[in-house]
Image (cartoon, rainbow, N blue to C red; front, side, top):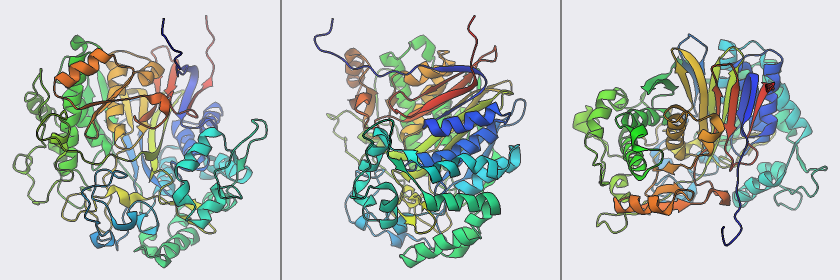
Length: 592
């Protein structure tokens, strides 16, 4: 028996028929599930859920942000709706003068910028894509109108959503900078300038967004281009320009979302479909290809050897990411090489079984890269070594992401995996007066150091962490998965794929299992791993730190997932350490 009480956090799985929705708030989840119950398909439900999430989870996403959606109908090719945030055409590296500090711990290890101008405020804003992307998805696959999909979001914006403890906590996280933006503070803070608090559950404090409701109504009636070529887009561009950001109305008018093929690989018996280019999907595919080179089932579930192999694979994928990934439309990047099985086989053969050693990115010569630019975070390989290694360095930690994820599968087996974001918590903190639109801080994704693949440039898409994924067998989707959590997304999603395929876990056990993360200097392990495992990994040379998820400090990514079983039952799971996350089936299951 333990000598002291211990708090356990757990979540029961959802099970049902007729399809399922899993998202990060109950209001958004129910909006999507209602669409499924009325006969809508997975894209109808996903778009409805996504718009609602932008209203009831505004610190994470909204019409002022961007994202990616993976869609696959049975026996059809998986496709991606890409609606990322883009730099305005006037963006230049000079807009973010550096302080001279080596790195900023509030960022991704980038050099620190004077006044944190790339973190919050008007210059941190990139052109948002959410409205264009969700409308395009509905046009391509949907069966309901844009007005129908927006109806729940409009209702929540007008009537208000309840501010319970989690909402209060999220507002408190951003309080210092939210207070500096009067239009934002007027919406999300109480009359005393503090985070709102609900004292009684039956009489919650309601956060109303009247201006946003009018904006959403305009999009519903006039179409998505009102956000770009119409009055709303013009008002946003004018306000940004008036406050020193390099925007013109043309930056909004030229924005277009696009549909493109998914990036795919095979892991075990599963076809994995995700997003490519300068995103987390490319890193996810490289990680899975590397993991596939090892017999991890034989190594054992979460044994030190298995975790060692996982860490080596994740480290290699991140080393290549930091060195070479960026917007392929602006700069040469070795996408085909990094996502090939042949490259993974060659890389994995270099890993030692008994010892962790620095894993460097592929060389420019071997990758066929000719641009001659320096990699971002060049010390990442050696910083991961245990503290007693002579080359150990300590780069900055990353900030928690302001991202949401939703998974949907419908009664016919169509699957949607959608990740969208403002980037960091509360994005830029800028709300444009009269519109209610809280804007992203997408410029923070760029490396502010000039002369690197992911440096700032006009019209460029920054390197993002999003990696929504669908798993299929013989062309038929059986899992929709993804997560929020900044750089931690990629390692999280890879482990979900492993849990669901290698170990045949259902959605909730796959999510609830303890995880590791290699996105920063330390090898982060859940405190739930045995002390002997931590000791063994340190002995192999890993720089290990353990984190207790019950502190709710965001040490790991926050996933959702839905799995369709062979008998047509759906089981869904969400992060047990993100309290509002909810999975809901369209119809219940009659137990025999």
